[in-house]
Each structure stands twice: as structure tokens, then as C-alpha cells.
Image (cartoon, rainbow, N blue to C red; front, side):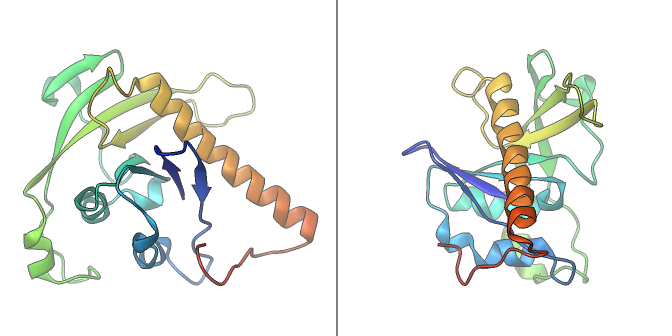
Length: 181
């Protein structure tokens, strides 16, 4: 995952998790490192109503790949913002006892989240994926054009490649640090 700071334009990156640890609990331990005005960039492993709502409470916006949900169709969206750009809402999911938080915590979350769903068509040689969907809490299409959000998300992919390069160069299977800082 990565975090983009609007204040200074920097892209911070956190490699969270490995084969033994799921990434969401590790992200939650790092919430305190995020500040209001930051933008959290995450892949489909971070597509969670709970985490999106909790980050928004902190003033942190999210840009994540849609997962475990079907994309909302134009006919069911709140508003069409542009080509491949829809204003949608997610209803709070029903509580599941297997979740890592309580029913009370779930009920404290907003009943719905307003989001944008952006369909990204990938027309780059070497990419297996030809299209994917981003959901984001950045709702203003004039302030945050869909092309820029897609570009920001693709920068997150560059971070993944940089981590791979560092691991290969240093002969490391896992890249670890003591603290997010």
C-alpha cells in the first residue's frame, strides 16, 4: 500500500504483510502514521467498507481497487460524472461474526459511503490486466479528474516494482523495517 501526501506531494510507501500476516490488520496498526489530507492507495486486498470508513473519519481519502463487489452499473449509480466515472454508494454490510471487530463497532460506521467508481482501461504493452475498477472517496471530478486518479493508482504499481527491484538487488525474500517511519 502507499500513501500520497497532498501537503508536499510525496508518495510514501508501506510494504505490509507477508505469507503469514494478512495486510489489513497490519495497515490498521499503521493508521496513526496517516494524517488528514493524505490519500491512501491500496490494491484489492484493502477494498473494505470498514477501513474506507475509518480512514475517512481521520480525514484520509482512499483510492483502492474494487474487489469482492461487482462494479455498479450506470443504471444503478447515483450520478454519471463522466465517461467511466460514476458516483455510487455502498451500503454498510451486514455484520459477520468472523470479522476482526465487534457488532457495535460495525454499527457505529455510517450506514452508507458515497464513493466514485472509475473504470480504468489499460492500454499498455506488458500488462495482463486490460481493465479494472477503482473506488475512491475523492468525489469531486473537477478537483480530482478520473485520469489523474488512474495515474496515481498506476504510480502505486511502480512502488511494487521498486520493492521487487530492491529485494532482488539485495537478495532478500522479505523486506522488513522496525517501524513505518
